[in-house]
Amino acid sequence: MLSRTADHLFWMSRYIERAEALARLLDVTWQMSLVPQSNDAANQNWQAIIHLNSLEESFFDKYDEATATNVLRFMISDTDNPASIGYCLRMGRENAHAVRGTITAEMWETYNATWIELDAQGADPMMTHGPGEFFDWVKLRTSLIRGATLGTMLQDEAYLFVRLGALLERADNTARLLDVKYHVLVPQGEEPTTDFYQWGALLRAVSAFEVYRKTFRTGISPARVAALLILHPSMPRSLLFCLRGATKCLELVANDQSGETQRRAGRLYSELRYARIEDILDSGLHEFLTDFMDRVEDLCNSVSHDFLVTPQQAA
Image (cartoon, rainbow, N blue to C red; front, top):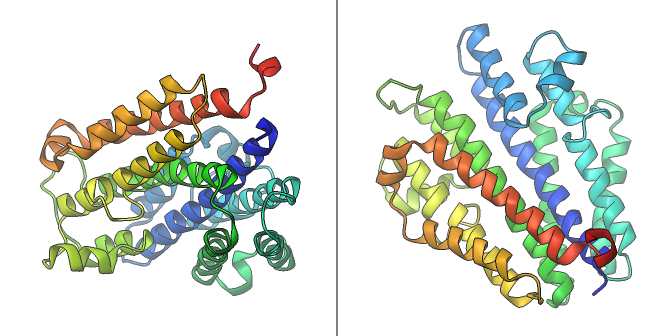
């Protein structure tokens, strides 16, 4: 496969996965903002999203305060923000357009229709029906894209690059969501508390509420939420599940220069597979997740170097 084709497929799926993850992160923050709290506490939650995505400079160049309205507008439709949902959906569609000969007609039609529907909502889509309905629309459209991919695409090397991009992006975003929300709900130096509504909102943000109740059959606890999202082998958005799938994809597309990337992925997967949540929490969840996100970023860079860059570009 041509490296530029693999590159478009890899980033096509990453952008769509990122748009969905942003919608989920913003949705759970929006739901939590509806709980009675001080303005300072609410703004702190919204500012955490800006901090997590390393967008402080670009955000505060345009806005004086990290309020719900400002952050939502910046992260949904701001054309100057390359991390916004609108930007991600547009870039997903553009990458799909570049490989129309590789993906199926159903896939292209779903990508294209998603962008057309978003464009029809105007410059500020969240104001058309409200944030909640917009986030549900994003999750629906990305699910349709995923369904078209799984249901119609030949599961060859091209499919593996689509799958690899989606899994690495999903792992990174699950870690980001857990890092932000866990430390908002369990402040440093305080005993963990259980607020059913807020922990339930976090689980619903990753479509894991029913999975949690089926797995643990008890009340919600912070440690069990972390265990589910990090170490559950069958939870589609857990870090372990994503790394297992990414490692398998790397094995199937391996080339002469990808050995080191496979080793790093395999090592990270093994560490997750044999980890215990008690050890992770004792050593510091934030530190663990920060290290994980750094290593996933390193894997993405290594994949780009090994598969998506031509020898002339690498030189």
